[in-house]
Amino acid sequence: MPDEEKSRLARNLQIAISIVGVTVTVSSFLINFAARKRELSCVLLGYEKLISLQPTAVAPNIKVELDGLHITSLSKINLVIRNTGSVAIKGEDVKEALRIEFPSEVKLLSAYVERTTPSDFSFTVAPEKQRNSVACTFLLLNSGDEAYISVYVFNSEPAPPRLVGRIVDVNRFLTIAGETRNNRNPFPFVTSIGSRRALYWTLLFLNFGLGLLCLGLIVGGFITFPRYHRWAQRWKAEYERLRSEAFESLKEQFAKIDADDSWTESENRNRKHIYLDSATKEAARRTGVPIQPISLYDTWGELIAGSMFFVSVSAFFTLTFLFIYGSPRPY
Image (cartoon, rainbow, N blue to C red; front, side):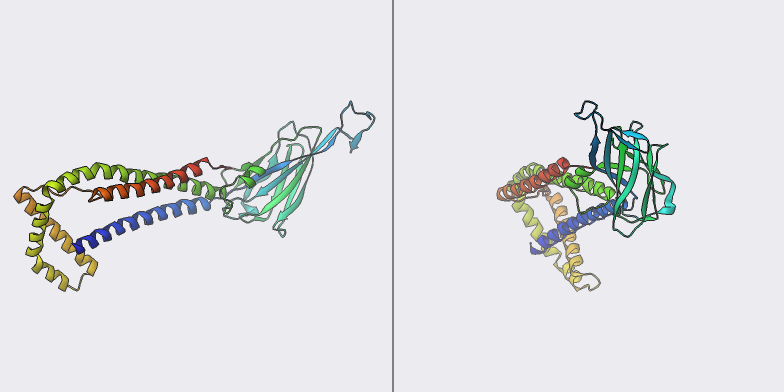
């Protein structure tokens, strides 16, 4: 009946809207929660060899000295200190000095701040040769602020450093290879590493869940439809007759429901559907007619068309899941 079909469509839309609403709410909560975390990263851009003097060179008498130090090799380490969180970090939040610490075999010579982005904030560095580190000082680092630092090392091979120190609400520091971050970042529009991580896992599980749901609908259709088809061949005509009789017996009650202005049209439609469904099932129990089995489809054509649709949707979500899963994760 037309009212029954409208009621079923309204219920399906309500369920779909509820699922989408819950999914969007949970995803937004996870992403916003991750975005509020403070993060500070040390991005290693690369090394540059400036001087290399070998004892077996053509001119063995060439020597390089600096402040009494005999220099046989000089290298430059290019770094970026970046606020990769979504919250500003103030100078007073630093409880233990922020330092760029190098392995003991690396010999530090000097360190300089090449530039900052944006260019109007203060960021200073000072080598601490006793600790084999470079101390960093700043007043404020907003989200996305960067300080490009050059560290010169001599008579040793350059090696990746690590950030050490204590900053309020910063649980750990990240050291990232610059090429990996810049060229292999699947979410370049998200600056916060925490937000990227939350977005990655949210999209991954969302596509996995939707693909699994479509697969379940395909399997459920092939499981429920044969049972419904057997019932329809034997009992559908009798069940529809009972339903028509129930509808005729409830006409007076339906007229009262339509005249009740305290309910909306959609609510009245749902109430009439509930009364009609209950009356039909009661009549079926009295006459021994089996209750109509639940099925997503009414005909073989609907089963094939619906299954093909859900197969294509499931394939889309599955391929998206595999693409996201196989994407680089420079976190």
